[in-house]
Length: 443
Image (cartoon, rainbow, N blue to C red; front, side, top):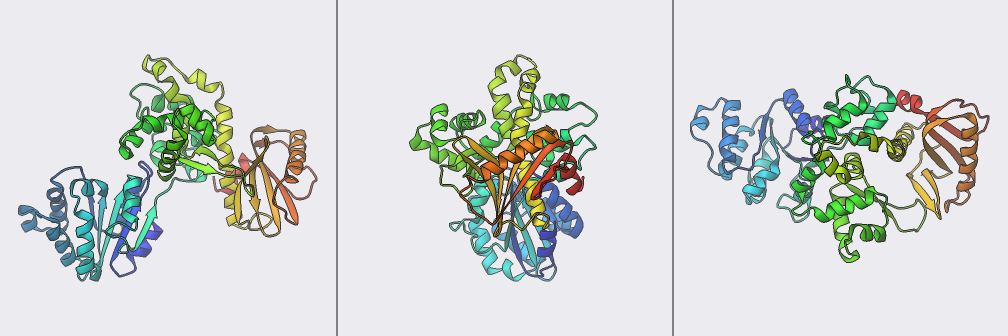
């Protein structure tokens, strides 16, 4: 919102691109922005009559009876009309789901370029193009795009932080972590959670029964972006099952190594998969599913679809290793937490790089590298006694000696679900649990 308000106050013509995955809150953000500053909100449908729909909204906004009776017939008249209305006064125009406009009217972006260059750029218009198809929207911003060099700004609307998600409901912080490990920071998913019901009742009703709102969510999202999804499904299933290196993904998914790179690249560009390298090392990277809902779905829902279709309750099966699954996602939350402290200057120094490290079966969950020190951290999704803490700190000390990174000081850190006693009498140690994570983040 702050970004949009700053652009609004610039006083010059603005062509802004807003994009992000579905259900992340783009439309809500833009509608609230329109409520605050005024303007026209146009939402596109995949229809030949888009200009009729747009004309109706614009006629109502400007109380233009002539336009109401005589809808705009081409994009030239559309852009010319907007230019006239924004000649002297600031006019905000949002075109949401703009990919549908470009899909039906392939000349749209080229004509926008033409009329931006000739008339719109000299007005006081603030034209916002918003879309949910990541591949299309990134194409809009690419060098080859007709409006490359014309846009004055772009913003990708990302997911909420775990701390922001915790403000949705007054529920135990343990359940916030569990829910975040499934839904990530997507606002729409969180808004559909019913705190009056139990955790597993919610997950069952939203994901684990035939016809549930998000039962087929990953399939729906992938079909919106891609023509053929079967190979992508095989790849995502392999990664969710723990086959994370290039060769193992190829073997498990039955996708040849000559083709696999292309598919992984697409999934990375869409934000569903990421590749991670050991910090400071030269080993090959590992692939992980970045999107929490995709990770949960391909691990627990997709392989049990036949049972779900027969109305079998699969919650007991999920519960068997669910806490281990949460522990894996908790590592990301811990990194997010420490990076937040780092930004506020609350760590031993301001670190320039965060990541993980692994080598020959040994792993450090979080490594932060600064000019004078290295911070090594362990994330534990369980309750720790003082004896547990001492042992983990000893292990971290030994692992840190094997890091290919050398600094003057090494600090050790543990973030756990609960630490019974944080007084271990050792310097250079940082200990946090969930109470600290949510207290320091404003829960």
